[in-house]
Length: 392
Image (spheres, rainbow, N blue to C red):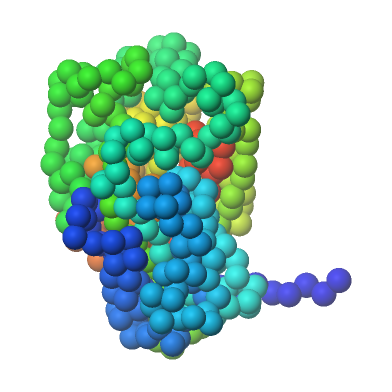
């Protein structure tokens, strides 16, 4: 069997909208805005694109629009360009980056556009909750009467009991997100919050409180990938994708044996570190998927940034702040930057690019060289870990 060498792949440009409630823009409009910004910043045009990867979770339900990649490609005037929709809940964006990276690395395509887009704010609360729950196994989910909040509560209670921590400790994850978002221009909630406000917010499913959970969001983020050699020719600031790994686990968390194991995330991280030739201590910042505060704390542990049960210690001691040992969610994470679910992983890739090219402004991590992003669907039933490295 002939072994074909993989090409090095670079992120050569990014574009994005602010995460907000975009009442004046359609889902196509958001996509086009972010995509054209990305292409323009690299001096590229639509004719240079030979592949489009569209990450979205809920358009089929909330907008009644399926076949999104082809619809949007045609809106861009690209009727004969390869286009594929990626639908994997909160892992959609990271998976779209993963698939695009693999295609470029293997020489299948050269210049590709990856865009994540979601429009959730115009739907009713009931429709949003139904859409979010639709990523679970419906035969089990509907039969048992479980909800996403109740499953998160199970994980939350188990975590507190096993490691002897308080809710006030776990809730520090939301405080960290809002602190970082307070200086982020594209954040939906750019302000700080207090522990007292979290603990006084309504309970969704004990102990999960409103201010520990993401809210409906609209937004689009885009990255342009190409071979590293072409990126150097273009002369635009760029970063390398050092690794990209995806691992799956059982969707039913109570069938996993241990609801805190998150084996898919552990395996994805281990494989990504090996592919990139790094260890957790080499990571200068990480954007983790914290749709619930407790999931952010657990992610820090499973990614190897601290020992099991010590995620809250990282928060208490300020190690996850921008000037800390391992800055986490440097632009506010899902809670405060906002969570247009299908687009989250692409926003994370954008944020990694901004950090590694020194364009993060007030949110800049000093001397950042290696960054990690983590996408998740259904409590890490699907886990995607992408690692980015500064270069040139």
